[in-house]
Image (cartoon, rainbow, N blue to C red; front, side):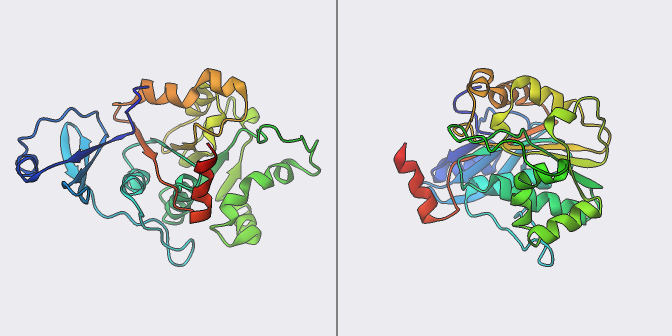
Length: 275
């Protein structure tokens, strides 16, 4: 992957070049579905665009969620602005959002997915996650219960945005949320659904190929991940997400945004100081 490719280009323009930009006279080298963040000399963002069919299309202000279900989510920084726009696009079926802890990647995906299912854009959310423990922690052993009981701890990010565990179980009971462990995904053909893979840094290239191969008519694949939080050496060696970006960037069916700022809390942001 090109080190500087993040799914967007930031243009810092003086008055002269700003005028050229709005006259479509400023030369730009952009990939398909790459975002453009336009800012002035004071680094104040003034506009957002996306390169579609070699034409810059101005973005509308994105808002995720519903006041009645998840609450509304608005962008807090330019990268979130682009990521929220990507999640709302029906014409880009493969979406990847990466970023550090607290940058909002999983929260945005969950809120947008719940909204899309509520609006009838998809029948259900298929939740896929490689059940890998945090590195250097002790294995708890076999968890009791059935398949759902064993995967329930990995679903708690959904519970935070759908009314707790009770709301989560209602989604499952109504058939709006289905959990499929990665190990059981082979051979499936999934239609009219959002296939959501959380913490995809813990996937190899072959894992990602397996998940992509399940996308059938009317479905989309949404993935998020943090390249600094890999929990096994095998994932570091395979570099599944980097390979995905390198091979798919510029493809009209693929969109990507890398988030750079933690928005969780001032305390959470201090974690970076331990690097």
